[in-house]
Image 1: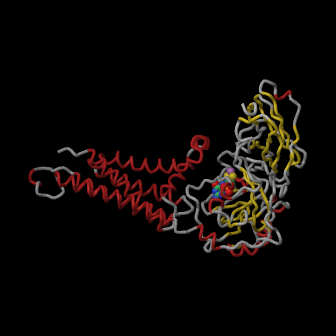
Image 2 (image 1 turned 30 degrees about the vertical axis):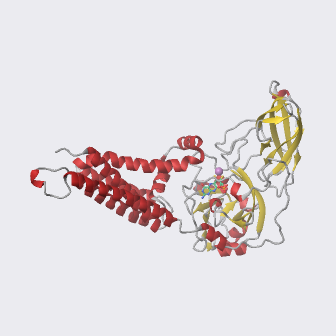
Image 3 (image 1 turned 60 degrees about the vertical axis):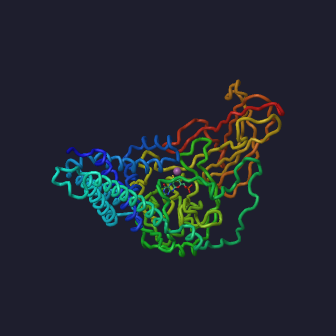
Length: 520
Ligand SMILES: Nc1nc2c(c(=O)[nH]1)N[C@H]1C(S)=C(S)[C@@H](COP(=O)(O)O)O[C@H]1N2
Ligand SMILES: [Mo]
């Protein structure tokens, strides 16, 4: 009798689910990264940069769930497709799960949250249990060979029932294991960890009150933590328990050492307002925010280690393997470079790097702002390229001067006196001037010489943005509204349009605004 291909396919599907479920559970028990996550990381690492960029552009912040779902679906599909082949030739099942195990070990080993040892004890047992499940199910799906075996259990209609029962139980068990793993994996309760650590009081600095302009629709001067943009490569936010966490300072230093969170809290003397911005921010984009950071001056940390001559680069490594690299000079040139432990008066939120991160004023995040910091390593610029450098982004990346129009929020306003307002930032160079140009769309913008000077808010530091506002007498019509900023050194941002890659977008932000007759 020929085998039932559908039953064999279902056997393969259930076995694949079991292998994935067991892997999730074991990974969680080992405190390691999920295997699906590790495989997704490998996929991203092996995918050419432009393809990854295209995927991110297409999917936005859904890129990660999409990839995780795809990896899971492809694994299950492979089980479904290979099931019938394994039914005919058992060696197919053996090879398939051997490959599963091997790929799992390699993917896990390449994940800094897992490592070889844990990867082995996750992937190999998962593959073994998957394979045993496959064998048992294929066995139950084997049709009666002849009348003589009619009395054997597990064949015929009764066999089919048994098959479905086992396949169902196995798949259900796999789901329970995976979900259980997820729940157990979150056992480091970051909110409890955050509540358990204390931030130092930095001498006499009360949180600023009423800083910034009060314009309706303009984001507050200090970005609330929950509104702060988030950019990172982490599929799941690393959950670090503060008491076990260590910061290692090593490389080209006289005395390598490690710090605990308590050490950092004791050494924290710096409180500074810094605007952080992502190199991927488009002109007018919102991947920028301003917070008051509390931390330890990077210079203090380096002093204690004794930086050796020739150590031109500081590398910041994360618990999740992400790296940044920037010139050693920016740690000691007077800007507020720090290992931050506090953000707007609270311990760092998990998404923003709890328990500690780097904050380097004036540099884009991808070269400087390591979250979930685990190591500071001194090296030479030519000896190491951090995460994004081989992926096509510039090695050195100072923040470019930018300005953005936030108000009016929509594209339609009523005639009358209305504010045009926004923010402008210039790395560590402060902002000295912001100007707005309003041109009817039928006119040539470039022929319009009239730039309206904006009123600026104060800035809490040279590396913080300023808010700006212009009162505009809006008459009916449709206009192009442009903004440009001049930094504290007197340099006006260029109108030349450039894409974010490789070192930050340029160009003037422009919005189109239609003014209607009031009451119309
Ligand atoms: N561990 C880790 N740190 C990281 C990143 C990352 O992918 N992993 N991304 C960097 C980038 S590109 C930016 S712009 C900033 C963003 O910090 P935020 O998410 O707190 O706004 O974090 C930086 N630090
Ligand atoms: Mo970024």
